[in-house]
Image (cartoon, rainbow, N blue to C red; front, side):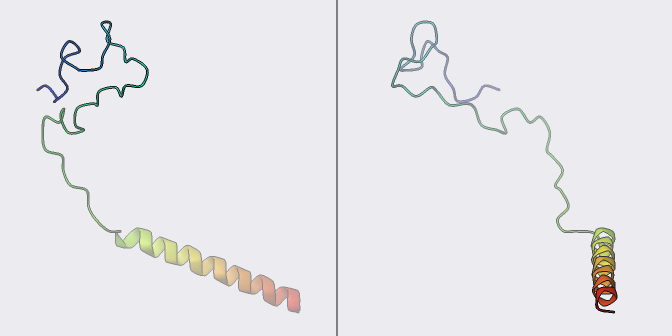
Length: 75
C-alpha cells in the first residue's frame, strides 16, 4: 500500500536530486496507520484493584511514619 506522497519526479518544489531548495517546505510523510496489517487490540482502561490497594497501603505507612516521627520529636 502506497501513501499519498507522490514520487519525487511529480512533487512540486523539489530539485532534480530530490533535495528541497531554500524557502520550500519538504513533502509530508504518509499517515501513521498506513503500515498496520492487522487490527490492534484495545488497551484496558482504568486501574486494577491491586495497584490501587498497594498505593493506599504505602501512603498510609508513610503517613503513620511521619506522625510517629513528629510525636517522638515532641516528647
